[in-house]
Image (tube, rainbow over the protein chains, first blue to last red):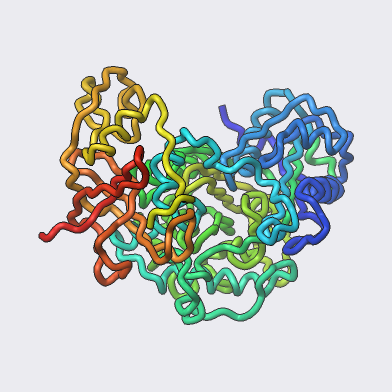
Length: 386
Length: 137
């Protein structure tokens, strides 16, 4: 069964502000983003009968919004959750179980770090003291993403000769996109040397190999093909989708240089009847420079191990022949903790031609790849305009 | 590196034998008699074949360094950065997360695939943590 062209993304938006949202709560950001995305679609909250989220309980979110949906999905597999939920929404709509799906996100990552808000990201991964993580990983001083992803990057560098300079290329190209996005958090000029001279967080990651930690919310609205044509904006069609997980904790990834994007990407391309050369704009998770680099390989945009050379010479920057992370990414635009929703928002805006200075000319197809956990889960979407 | 605040493992019924071995400074891990492979972490079945014929076996403690990173922030109480976290591949196959000890946290000195051996750090009366150090090659 194929979900290709069965549903369209018809509304997307962020919360009223992103970056630092003093005086707000994570749920407030969910609600603002929901209102803004529904307005973008020309729909009302009362139209929503399918609710999808990660972070808060989906029941609690429905209650907070004041709706009683007949379909709910709280898939919580990290930053990829919202991307994966697009596929789930498509399946539910195609099966006739719901007709207007709303996916929301909201996190107070910046404020929570400073003790001024609750993050809203849901319970921590290492809650259970009997868990394998608590017994076999935490006693060795690992936990948060930099401590784990750095282990994967090091093995990639060892096997394929990937260099710190090649990782820095990603940070610099992404910053150039951010300079074209008024909503981006970091817009100062950035050089390769700036990245390489920033302090170590977890070798081989410098500070500027790591994403931001911001406050932000986002939402998107999905409807079936018939309804999509009647709405405010031109529909953006789901052409292909896939999801996959290969492990929970990084240490249990069967091959540390791989990610499940090789599986979710393959399924998405097969459903869309496309190959990487058919894609005009690429929006991939960049929790770290390495995350984007390895994902490009896993999706087949270049040979395995060639991500470093492929992305060199600012190939993914504005004006390059591989436009990637055109909003400025998690590295420079926003990254509240679970970033996946913002990949979707940017892909839809690019396909509608709404991106102003950073618009990729004639963008007809876009690929989104969300990554969650410790390179543990991925969702891939291939989207296309009319 | 040991302090009273240190986060220590809480053995479960599935893992008690492993920690009992560590307390004796011996590395014991599960072995699947259906597919004839060791595995880690412990559970009552084999994650490769879902066979439930599992026995505990003592392993050599020899390993190679699969990957490492140098942590410049203390992610748990009792750690003084910089320190080295690592994934090692045991001679018998399974991989484990651990710390490298008896080596400077210096990329000039640490190489992926270098040979290692287990050492045990007595973290409390009940818990000894397996860690790995370089062996002269």
